[in-house]
Length: 235
Image 1: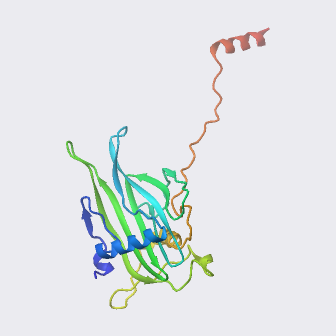
Image 2: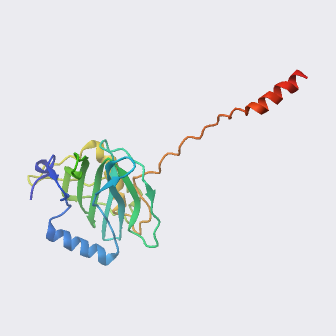
Image 3: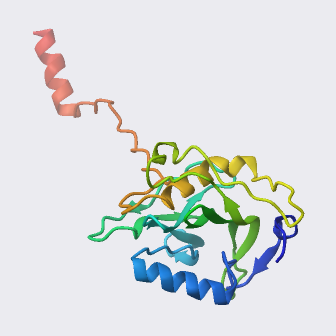
């Protein structure tokens, strides 16, 4: 297994995107999550905006949990700050899609939990804008990969009050603590909470867009009305 120190800064170009687990493990994880009704979509896709003539990234905050297992992915900017969704998603079911995000650059934060054991993957995605006659493509860089971290609390039960305030601990093969990039600790706390949110129906980190300011300026009166007003005052 590759340590986190070796993974950090790895660039994976083209259509292939970094994955939380190797192919065999990934299939088992996805099969089990499907059985328990947890839908998590960590993939980031490339989309083209016709009006602005540029390529952008599309992500889906999604996931949830049952008591024994959970998976969640959310998104932030390169500094770990919240970003607005394009739109929230209401669904009949639970533990599924919660909000769509569109941006020229994204950082995905994904958490997979089995009881008190956690895997974490943080990836930075950028768009390589195309030159004339070529298609744009996604560039992905792994910022953090934590395997089999431990958090000795039941965040789905008696200790769920601290969900969103703590993160698992990760160690390398030599037993040394692996530090999580500090700018992403806040968003990781939210993703850990999502991976413990039983019957999840809402987003945990993406935020509502700020409303556009409404001008309070009073429109000037038409010239005819102004002339009448002035005449009345003269009389």
